[in-house]
Length: 341
Image (cartoon, rainbow, N blue to C red):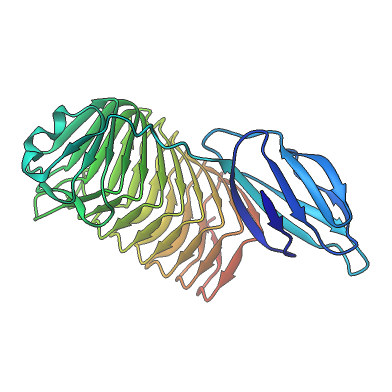
């Protein structure tokens, strides 16, 4: 893979273990340091060849390549993540909107023909299922909880819109246990009820592990996502917009990693409740109504290269929380950081 050097630039690469990266470095630059997940293989004039030495499954690794030259100390941040492997495409079943009542019986790989699937009674999945739709035109809609996924093993959903219609209280999608990946999906229309967890775009609970890539959480009365106790979440390149509560809410003993995503016009952008953990890199958190980020007591979080702008308060830090802040940008907030006593 060929990469050009850009001083103070950031680059996120999808790679495989052992793959090489050829970096066209700064003229007459002398390599000073590089991340531990890279191994230097070759150097030819201003070209440097690195091999991927280490990958971490479902985690993005960040590091900085630094040079020395007569103009100073140029550097560039690089992030690597494991190249996603699409589920095998052989033997896919094609399914049509008129068969919506039978959705819960599906397993294996299924291609959903474009259209709206009326699932007013809700859909339940378990085991292993891979559903493929066409983004924007393949819609699963219902008047209560649209989809529940329980103890699924490596299940995969792509190109689907999950839409809660009407005024009946409910979440849009609930994942209970298991491992699930969503790509290019939209979660919208959750209807809130006081004193319950309803109204959220996606609820992750009972130790579930969920990966989200290129997803949208829009116009839910509750939160975009709620991550409950002992559950894990990885988010990449996603949008959280116009949700009535938090874009993302991480509860006690839950963990979230969020990269290259946008939180805009929610009540709060990100909320870490007591005892939660998080990693937040290269996100835009802007124009949320109450504040950008709330870090509650006994929470642990790292924030790196995020932009936090246009809030009444950018970040609220409570006692006994442990946070690491590196290279973040604050702009146009009435107050950037509020540390509660």
